[in-house]
Length: 171
Ligand SMILES: CC(C)(COP(=O)(O)OP(=O)(O)OC[C@H]1O[C@@H](n2cnc3c(N)ncnc32)[C@H](O)[C@@H]1OP(=O)(O)O)[C@@H](O)C(=O)NCCC(=O)NCCS
Image (tube, rainbow, N blue to C red):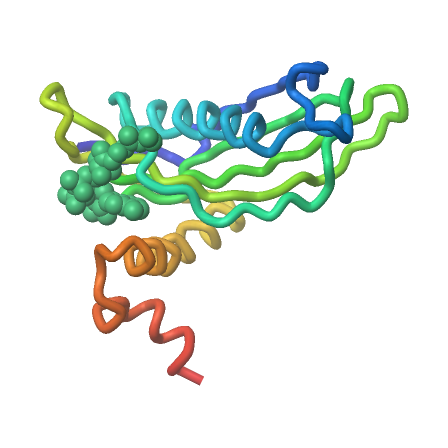
């Protein structure tokens, strides 16, 4: 396995909110946005691993502002850290009103993907080297976020999550 930079996985998706994408308030439906986010994040994970991937988990998402009918949706996805077969992808999502020349934040989110081999079993992925300050901060936090989601998914005992526990005990 080789090592790749975070920026090599950068994926940017741009969509236009059409009537069929909206709820009764004329805003983009959360489910449609999460669908687009899943595709953008999966592409980032596939760029990093050069393998087919499946979504293993989606962290909590808080929608801060509604995205209006006719506005543009921008999704920026990048791998923050690679473990053995899994990769965490961070996304920034914002809306844009081109007429008013106004951009506004929708949400930030983390999705986890697992690369699969020809028999659909988890396979090892390339390591990731963070370069910028933001990439290093995200890389650092990824281990704790991984421990939290594995505990919540019943795949890790809280006692084994050393880095996560240290957040609360090393004061
Ligand atoms: C994700 C999946 C491949 C994991 O398979 P598994 O047999 O549990 O494999 P393992 O326990 O060996 O775990 C493999 C990797 O998945 C990670 N993983 C498993 N469950 C996870 C979860 N809930 N959240 C985050 N990562 C998870 C493990 O940490 C491990 O990562 P690592 O290799 O980097 O250490 C399997 O559960 C699956 O296929 N799920 C369905 C995926 C899918 O269909 N997604 C679309 C939504 S319907």
